[in-house]
Image 1 (tube, helix red, strand yellow):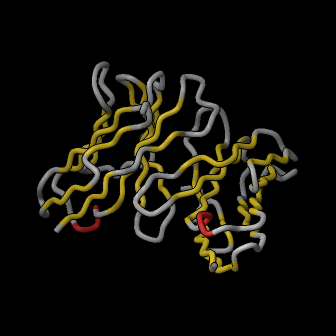
Image 2 (cartoon, rainbow over the protein chains, first blue to last red):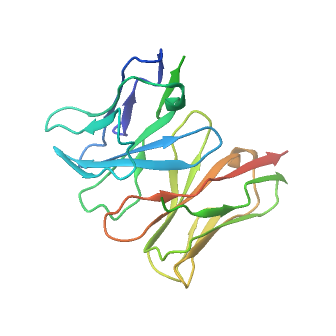
Image 3 (cartoon, rainbow over the protein chains, first blue to last red):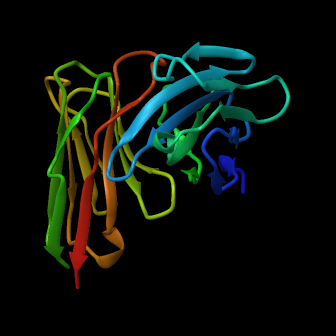
Amino acid sequence: NAGVMQNPRHLVRRRGQEARLRCSPMKGHSHVYWYRQLPEEGLKFMVYLQKENIIDESGMPKERFSAEFPKEGPSILRIQQVVRGDSAAYFCASSPVEGIEGYTFGSGTRLTVV
Amino acid sequence: GQQLNQSPQSMFIQEGEDVSMNCTSSSIFNTWLWYKQEPGEGPVLLIALYKAGELTSNGRLTAQFGITRKDSFLNISASIPSDVGIYFCAGRRSGNTPLVFGKGTRLSVIA
């Protein structure tokens, strides 16, 4: 299965801890997108990355959130000092080089902050 | 940020009925897409539309890209229980800009 792989599927963190979410794009896809979904809500764009570059981070909160997509390895979304309001489903998607097609989404990481 | 207006918010229908949902925006989009999300999973692409006026089918699903480029609709004919889920519209304004999503239409099918 060469789909978008996200891990972990579920993550529980205490307030103040760090959360690290991983995403491996589909084979041959070099564009990665992170979205956040709150209960009963649609998906809100957070950040768009290509290998070693952040292309658009207009949806990222200014503090505590960061993302990277290194030359080797998965894309990482990091949330420092988590708060209850960070509890949500975080989805990663990828698209081919041309980027004109729809995205392929992973199954998401459900973050719960207690 | 930019948000698409999707309606209805939820629908309860009898098995075998047809379903229609739509999405509107105050801005022009160059691409419209429709996704379906089932519980505990990520959205799955159903139909992609790239040209104003385009009408595209995928089995019992039909979607159209509005002439004004500010709207799109999705029809599901002869609904079945496995159609249950949340349907999202998504649009892209240009080039490789990120997709913007609607809030979804929650579809329930009563057998």
